[in-house]
Image (cartoon, rainbow, N blue to C red; front, side):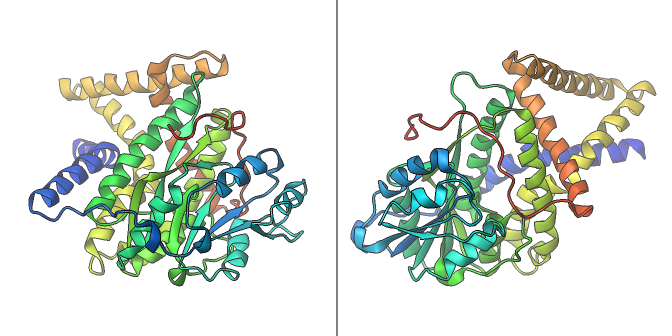
Length: 400
């Protein structure tokens, strides 16, 4: 019985982090071979839809000018573009700085109700075909809007996800390097998800939706960007991925800041799984359910719990002399977690050994999921975003 449990749990773990990506890529190859490869949309400048860029900013005075200059510099037909910045609750100079730009519609109220409340307020002001959401602490490449909006010529596309890039510079530590690797892998999965059928969730750094498909989510929603896009997917529309539109942000200042951010996301993941129960029904949309469970649900629920269980079961099998295979796997786990612990020690001493980065970040990420579960079920996770400190202001070449 212990052996059966061990292999089932190990299979789920490997499938979650490696197997799904391999299976997804094979399914995409099959789709291409049978002649059903999805054609990339082409940018027709004169037929792009009307668009509004929405930025929710809270106490972003140190970087808001840089964000505004970047936003106003994006290429798009001038007669079809609007800009809205919502600064609700800001107590610094952010509202005053935004109001200096006549091209921007500035929305401000002194009370802070959270990002999703700010987004709801902005949506009441929007009449354009498409809405693009982007975070205040990110910079977009010049053609980002064109690359996102060109897809809406296809009536089956309800939302478009841009790519998130994490910049850390040459001084990258474990948190920065691990976060950067994670998002590179995520980008590959999103590319294949999109080609197979649909992306399962978008990142708030950069995504867009059809205005008429917007559905308000509860004010206590933690991952509003994820919920908004998944509700659109649940209506039968595709959410596609466009790597030609990307948002670059600085890595978290340190592992503690990254952990704080990940715990919040994990709590939001549990909330999303509970509130999107309809998407777990394979009889409604089997491909979407397959992608959603494989890419998101397992990561946010079962798999992080199975990691310590597999280690304990493996130890029992090893010390009971169950066989060389179990001993080999046990020592492999010890080596992996040993590297992660070494990464933790080196992080505290500001030392860097790259081989420890990924094991350490992997453990931090799964620890955060467990912490997020606990926080959510205790009712201690607020929907109001608590900003994580990031490395110095982003002044790198974000076109790279």
